[in-house]
Amino acid sequence: MAESVRTELHTALEDFQRARRRAFLQDIAGWLMGRPTQLLSYEDVRPLVNMQGVTPRGLQEVSLDAIVGSVGRYEDFTRTFLPRATSDAQRWARVRVAVSEMAGLPPVELYKVGDAYFVLDGNHRVSVAREIGAKTISAYVTEVSVKLPVSTADSPDELICKARYAEFLSRTQLQQTRPDADLQMTACGQYRLLEEQIEAQRQRLSQTLPTPATTPQAAIVWYDTVYTPIRDMIREQGVLRDFPRRTEADLYVWLVEHQQELQERLGWQIDAGIAAQDLAAQQGSHSHGVMTRLRRAAPALAPGQWRRERLSVRRRQRLFADVLVPLPALPSTPDPEPWPALTQALLVAQRESSMLHGLHVLPAADEATADAAAEIRQRFLHSCQAAHIPADFALETGEIARHISQRTRWIDLVVINMAYPPAAQPLARLASGFHAIVQQTRRPILAVPRSGVSPLQRALLAYNATPKADEALFLAAYLAQRWRISLVVVIVAEDETSLNQTTSRAGAYLRQRAVSALFVPQTGAVAPAILQTAAAQQCDFIIMGGYSYAPPLELVFGSAVNQVLRRAPCPILICR
Image 1 (cartoon, helix red, strand yellow):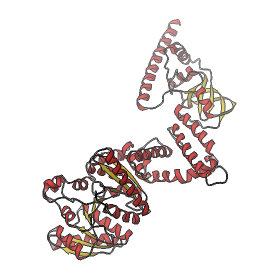
Image 2: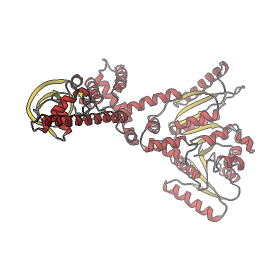
Image 3: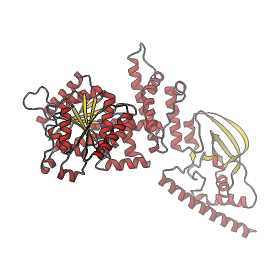
Image 4: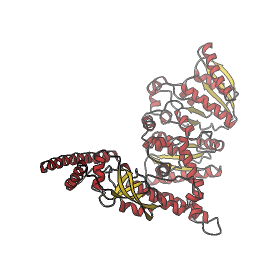
């Protein structure tokens, strides 16, 4: 009989060692996956959930899966009650033997907190019961009343977040005033940012009221006018798909912080929708976010990608909400209009309700250039203020083309002085800063010659059915609809069949959008046909696609774009 007991105890000890090895592997997997494996501590949970009282519930059958914590031994077992401590081997084995001998296990004692149970007495019995595959266990249950809900899936961090959320709701009373509000977060330290925003709102509100505003009053205004519009934008863009296991409130905080970081880095105001798009592209874990990051790493965008990105953010809104105006150095002699591009951009901004972003790039940082830059900034902002156009200004040092192309991620249109258009000779084009800007920029460019500031009333669209020409067609239709301009379409083709097909394609697109246009068929060289038609039809700006050749071929053969840029007396809108 004694030998049989020793054998059963030896077998039970082997079971314990196997269970302990599984506990070790479970802890390693949890660490690698970022998943909690520890039991909840009753003492840690108690101050978080605002306990109200206890009620004995008597003897019950309790699901083992619902037992997720312990009153005193939460460090000795994993979340699934696998044993961790070697010192528990003999005690665990004796409990295991008692089960084998049909001696049975006395009921354990449990606290019930929300939907979760904590072991007051009987940790080893729960561990063994799970090891032998039992689903339930007999327990004397004492229910603890709490204000904060607790589930069996909660981790310690999640319980802390729930408690922090309850404090936030208590202070703001949003649960009563906005019962549909869901501001739960997985990063509970971020409630500080929400409270700072509400306090700033309270101070602003107090300036308009006869008595100081309360925090609940400010919370209502903040939720309706600050949080809700950004939350709705997050939903419309589907940004949450790129951040699994996160909440809308998490994204709101990250978006606000990302927007502030971008604004500090660029020196510009950044639209929340653009910041959300960039946040998803840079940090989202969804495949869409990964692909977007890969596309942004590429040297060029596919035709039309720029507008698809913008329209996904600003549905049914203006296309050119943010306009970049590079500002060269002021001339040494007085000039009443040193920046034709700024004059042109102000007109665009008035029609589009745009914000202008001025950019001046210094060749080097020294005292003389700093003084000149301060004068440029003052003159730019004064011009915008006089035209009632919102504006900001940024100063950079280095290569002009590089800074312009880098900043085009954040804008919709570049309006630039065309003092030195691309030269006819290949080597001269290679050294052309304007040529580099056209090649590298990700957005449409409105190139303005020194004497070519235009009222933008009658446009000439150069169309040849290429992908970039299709983008020019899209923009021409948009401007005809929104700006109510007249539109002339010149189509240059080698033969009558191509001419008819191209004309039919453009005509069908414009009719579908209720845009009327005068079509002018042409044959022969492209650039002369565009310039002659523009002059004959008295067009005051030209819309055309960007370079058709890849950069090396364009450098060798040139392009119609370069020829038009060199000879046109009016602004040219180059489309991507």
